[in-house]
Length: 383
Image 1 (tube, rainbow, N blue to C red):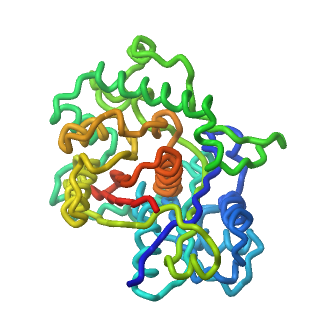
Image 2 (spheres, rainbow, N blue to C red):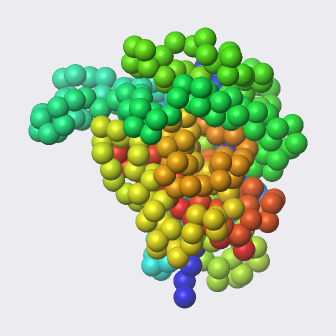
């Protein structure tokens, strides 16, 4: 029986807005993680059947199939194909799903999944900046829902629906920074990060979003960002970031043939849709579906990576799923690390894979909310 296993997972450090990675071209930064996969495993690039790359803002230097451009920038043979996909924040998690499906179906023997986003230079709305070309939300959609879609407003509605207080949001956010600081200081993230050159030629090997000393009292001084009198602000939201991440995937049979040892296999992969006005809740039904299909319970999962788009999202997910909060984002999340949209799915999975191996955790689950009311969930099994 064919399967899909992960034999290596790498990422760049995550750069803060207008930070050390802001001047990188997306194809060139992507090439850094592609090259790291071949350097670490010794696999010949021509053995890769496809590169499936996530990217959300496909404009400017992220346009024209940045996945293909990444392959060329890495100096890989022209025979290696690539495609770029957009499932909003879950794009590179979906890349993993597509790669796994291709491997299991026999379309691939070896595939790379990953993604990139340079949010510093490709700002929000860049892909729809020309009003003469129309707006992605059609009149019929606006008539159906009667409101414009807004993630920040959705995060506020989630906090209200699940009864999550400002103090709970800020406590969760401060803890994200605390956990990232502990992970950096212990060296827990070192193996997964590919150091890259910064804007001034310096070597960057550490996530730049960390704000040491973040406390609930400090966060309490920040003003709401989306709704007057609301609870969501810059400090309990994910950061605007730059980064890239990639995973080398293949069948177990191919790994044995190449003399490579798999880290984990893709056990279960699901996607779900939910209310596009709340927008950020589909990770809940996606997780329910994943657990049902896998035959596992929430207590069987030893580690969770739940994207911290806004603090209300993982808190609502924890409330619904009954997961142990200590197992959720044990090395910090997007509030502290950052959220380079198209790279985030693969970044979370890279972090999860390495944590599972380091802590000998059999099952890990990753899930993300996504624009449009979508959500992915993936269960990995340690090998």
